[in-house]
Length: 421
Image (cartoon, rainbow, N blue to C red; front, side, top):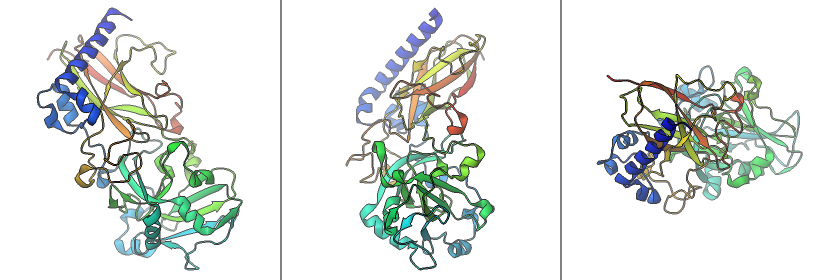
């Protein structure tokens, strides 16, 4: 390591240590740090200002990004039409049937024709005994930032599956929602039946979701009922659910697979910058903040690397392992979770939280976490900032699954200039 980089890393460690001591964050982190509570950092430095401007941890339902499919978009239909086609709570019906091509042996099917389809009141009746809620970040497989973070509430899909009195020959469960009664617009996802019936690795169950952050699921978010699969990308959590098919099919048949996507890849971890200056004065410390999506392998830490663009990078180092990476500070759980939750508090009996509403582990898998760093001054020049996650096994992003079609994990680059104004 050259002398400049060693000095830079030492200065970063000292700056961050002094800032955290001055703003009493070390003691606050033990009981829950709120990155949104600016008043707690009134006497701190530039970094406290950057932290005070961070997004809320949970996303308000209306603020989720929308990547819905359909022409017209189902949630854009007039209310009268929504009621007619079952996109309203009072008219919603769910059919659970055997696959006519690869039939499963069932005691009964739930169909609209026979008057046995599950309605919304029936779903809420199941919820009286079986309802669960859990936090999850919703992310599209091919988009490099989350769509939103929330508390999702619903009934495990298995409770509805058992209503069909299944006997044998069930290997796959596929499901789809309303798409204008147009076969060409049909969008379906699927899971092995074992994932529906069981929750491995301490995962929450796959649910038929009807609430987000304590509010009825809006049509734009997939209401009245959608699927939510905790460990997967958004294409597995289809909206406007109408049909579940129990099948003896031996392989996945997801619509999303038709575009060469990996339909069995669980959520990955990655880091991204939220705020960083585009221009800095020479030898002047500066603050940066960001977030990490916490994938199935969790996140142990977030690291940063600063590279002077005049210095060449090795041709064979596509994941930048030769750079000198320094640790950012991972911020603790907020005191106000935001997202429109009542009083900013986590609802009772939310999976992953204790009776006081504190997370059982931090960072929480399948969610996000904020990070911050105070970096020392640099000499004049053009620089690139990179950030990455490191998982619990010490594996750094984008590994162990660097492939683009299995979910975003590319290392982000942010350019900035150091010059006198």
